[in-house]
Length: 281
Ligand code: FES
Image (cartoon, rainbow, N blue to C red; front, top):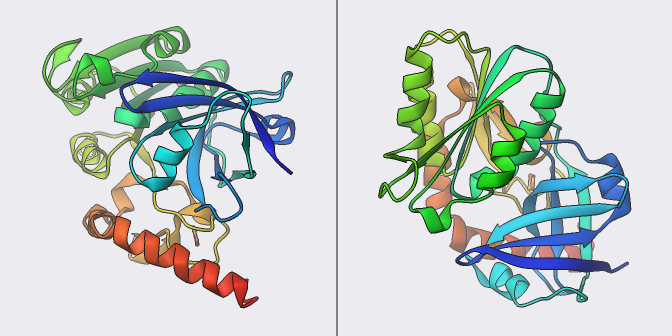
């Protein structure tokens, strides 16, 4: 079954939003879950967090940055084109409950998965303080959407071209230091940002959650490509996560795995597809 691309827009340089006609996924999706798509029959599996969904219209939004071959190929498609596969929702939904005040921190394309969480936490009755950041103002994603979805919005850019000059984690520290009673901090972004953010929030009496969603191959617990060490145990991001207690995540191991990610991923996909051809999956 092919999935139609309804809309496509470049929302920042090399960052695209696509709206896909996928009613079954839109109906079942919850904040924090992801999909895996394939452009064509021979395509690599691309995992992407669901950036938005509308049950009524059956639309599912994804946001991606052109990085490797598949995302560059994906960026060439337009409204009216079709994707071979669009599978989901995968992973566990975010544990959204009424907690009081929740801080959501999103960096770079990590702002995309934060957006549905902001909406979900807000409609569960929480005060949502969002902190979003990027290298510069042109790369800042979803500012208006995040402003609407949040009770308060703070912005940081590395070069100071918008919001506070500095990092999202600087603002996080300032809010935690202000004495505001915060129940939970959710951080999504590059692993180094999640590591630093976890370090900043750890001394405070607050739950810290990170969403690890970028290192997957099959997305169903079979390939082991997404393994992470959490509390000294191997966990699979795709079926045990993508959210984990940040204090327990081994970020150094995660970053080491990501450093070899590109080569590894290509090999893993090749191996996996070879195994599929041999009927092993
Ligand atoms: S992506 Fe393969 S086990 Fe998780």
